[in-house]
Amino acid sequence: MPVILSRPGHQSIVLIALVDSGADGCLFDTGIAKAFGLKKGDRGVRRNSSQGISGGMRTWRWPRGRFSLDFFGTTFPIDPTFADLAVHGAAFNLLGRADFFAQFDTVNFDQKNLRVEIR
Image (cartoon, rainbow, N blue to C red; front, side, top):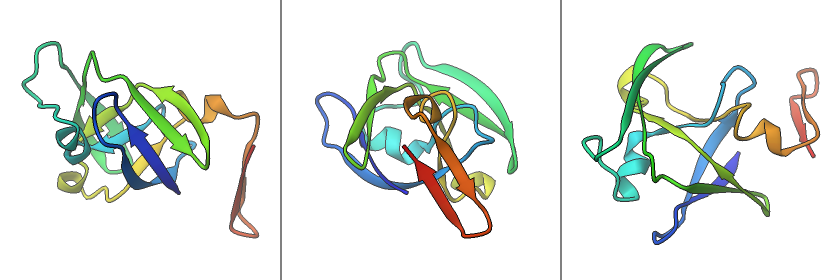
């Protein structure tokens, strides 16, 4: 899905992300964090690890990250996690339950017709 990720004081970034019911929260590549001027060595960065379909990976969260996500005209704050996705063979940014799904009444996957309903 196309989304727009924003951070105050920076230009917004249009990117593609998968709606992932198995993801706890939103996960984006660290290249996006760099584009917003964030560095892994910044003060207060929380390092962690995450386990997913691509295996285990190191993740980063910035304390003053204050991001917002625009999804087809609906804009809301998110607290994303970042990882070196390409290094782990994960080619997609993810929109997960805590940040993304919580903003909508319905997120329905219609596997038979290959459609997603979000409202």
